[in-house]
Image (tube, rainbow, N blue to C red; front, side, top):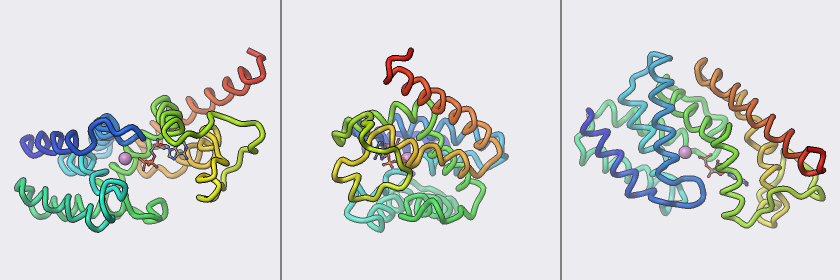
Length: 213
Ligand code: ADP
Ligand code: NI
């Protein structure tokens, strides 16, 4: 089991490397750590959670021709690395539900899936989430904030593309909503703390923006 996890770690490192838009190896590292902590608290299968966490972004559309191709790649890797068949099925199930376009609306069918999805969502919020948001914004050339762009939670893809969004808007668009989408009770606990962190950050940000602090 440990041998498989070590190999998955090396595989993820080699695929994700230093990708600059928020899906570098260290995102995978953090999601894996979180998934292990949540799995212990929730009594989930740690091996399945860890393996799914390590492989969860390999099927990402951005890295493959299509989602289908990405999933086949993950499946091939598991077969070549002697992952037991029942684990293989479960991990593919988790990854395909996570990467599904309307992924936020499809419920995870297993406890392990709920754990890994929570871990991935947690890495988008809190101090780490704040850092990733500004890194991603820099990556796509988006402003940190623009008072002329009214903060809204329903920007269209077009508006994003045309630079009509900002890093601060992304908090309203997505990050502040994640707390209420957590699956597990330990995930909810961790999300509550990370959510507070972001609210504090935003309050200070606007104070400083107006020179009041
Ligand atoms: P994930 O599926 O892991 O959430 P995404 O590709 O959606 O990954 O995003 C990678 C990181 O960049 C996340 O931390 C996300 O919150 C952030 N991000 C995504 N879209 C935007 C955006 N339009 N503006 C700022 N940050 C963004
Ligand atoms: Ni991810």
